Length: 439
Ligand code: ATP
Ligand code: MG
Image (cartoon, rainbow, N blue to C red; front, side, top):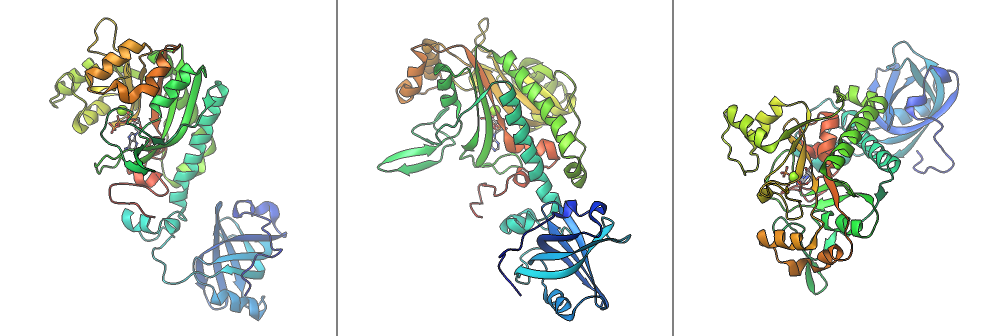
């Protein structure tokens, strides 16, 4: 038994142990997924990030000490296996490895706190308690491989359109949109908060002349609700662009979604198959429904809703059923949107805000922003916020703030859409909700 890597190195991942390398000697490294000891022959399944490969050990052909090592193995132990690749009609990928050397790099304890082989279904809480084991499942890691593609495509899209990546502080002195939903923290001798949105900072970057910016970062919301689409720590994809209005930034969001879904289909077909999910590519421009029209439609379908209210869960559901998969909901009442949203010129009770929806799930909220200092102060006061506590933000509006617009898009919710998963917790490695702060 040898527990150190020393000069041992992997030559192949399981994905490249194929018919192309028959008769070659390879070294693979991974976890013991399965052990089947039939007496005269032992089958191992070794798993790595790319998949699984069968290792076949016939007792007649192998030295006794190798067989002994194999018999001592426990499931989920970490091993390095050197051996020759041979074709096998019975092996899952048509090839198997005949081992010549087995190195145990770390033996796993038994019993395991949960089964990572997908044979036994476990409750989400059990799974999250042993998340490192849960993530070994192909169907779980597939979600995060798609998530990886999601961020890659989005960053590509932003880079191709000269949108600059920024990072803004997450330790903040005051609320973005009023006092609720904030996590207070102790900041030396003062109180501070965890940032609920990069909104104010990305707007200040418009005054800084950066023209178009984006940020992918943590947002923290002290919301108590316990739903399948809310977490207390989430990732937001935020963008803001100068000399643009809501229509322009909707087009950006629309184009980015189409590219993203095409990229996921092109590069993650294996993961989508594992998840048994078919991702429809939206065609052209998304449907766009005005808030007033949506209220009529919702009432006509038997769910009571007044003009001026936010959509209830039931309202979101009936609206989602009536629309295409992706659609914009635009022309919101000024009253229920944040202070920084630009009211409509002709009817100030409505504003230039929109949400991007996927069926009944809100993915993004965006708007044309107010860029005039006086109007901004007026809207703050109308919403019972004190301009004094926003002084350092307001300053950016006094000395040359261009007209601008932008949106915030929930990355974890977007990941749900790309994978067909119904619980947002599935899309986050170590989710933070009302009841969970570890692991
Ligand atoms: P909802 O009404 O669904 O609670 P919101 O309108 O409060 O969302 P925004 O402040 O508009 O959310 O944030 C922009 C986007 O960030 C949302 O559309 C959503 O995708 C994501 N998001 C916001 N809050 C959360 C959360 N608690 N958990 C996960 N994602 C969130
Ligand atoms: Mg919103």
